Image 1 (tube, one colour):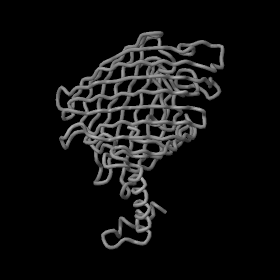
Image 2 (cartoon, rainbow, N blue to C red):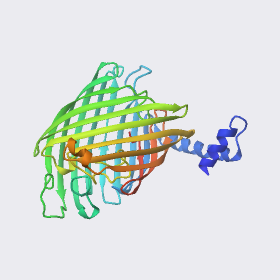
Image 3 (cartoon, rainbow, N blue to C red):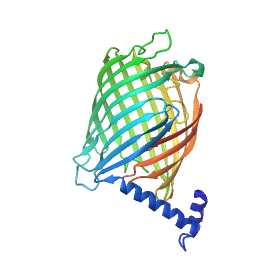
Image 4 (cartoon, rainbow, N blue to C red):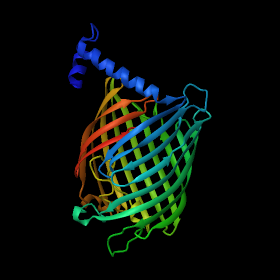
Length: 359
């Protein structure tokens, strides 16, 4: 009914709105009033109903404050998202993710502080793990990290990061002991270089986001991590655009299994269970076609391909996994923050209800 109505609007809006479009407009007006009613100053407080294959149905609340630390009109918005989430899989997540831009976008500080009680599953390593290999466990995770970036050239940032993470593991239902199965405490830091000329942060239509980062961790385990994240956004019409991403991740050393590069999840190769395929090396690519349908409503069609391996040279012999699907977006504010509902198909059918674009 909604898509049919959008089609009517496309052909007749210039003349006169049909009764169906007037009804749709009233629905959007009501949604806008609800969002406005949940906004107090710079804060928007939203009840959250969340779903993913990794969590089942989740409930909670998300408060987001959007503001500018700089008076310049082109300054990027700073934000402070706070989230409380509980799922039917008995998972609890508490997060704060302050993100600040200032001095005409020359400085950027992003961070994340979280506590998670997270029953989850480990399937082993490699690109051909099976469902019957599942080992349930429960992780209790406390983490805090922060990264400070400074622009050294237009759109080019150098960054330094500090990270501390502690995880205890309960209910490890196997006699096999592997790295991370008895818990760990690690701390480390790293450096990054990023080229970022996106015109907006939350739902960009044009520009590049290209980043390379290196991190080193010590503590109960010692290892290094390399990440290459390449994204390109370009318009394909007045109300549509394409988004493309290539992501390569590699670890070296003794790595807790929880932190091995992995495929899947709400943001990366949707339709693959997050962590189903893990190994020291992961490579994936995904593309998305995004289109505004009507007012705050948008559509996305996406697909991707990825694999994992013990090292880069063995990726060509690994099993590659495809995923794809479609979803809808509802724009929550003028900064482009979206509420999204995605239906995906990969190793299993999946539905994701979340905030922000996947990439």
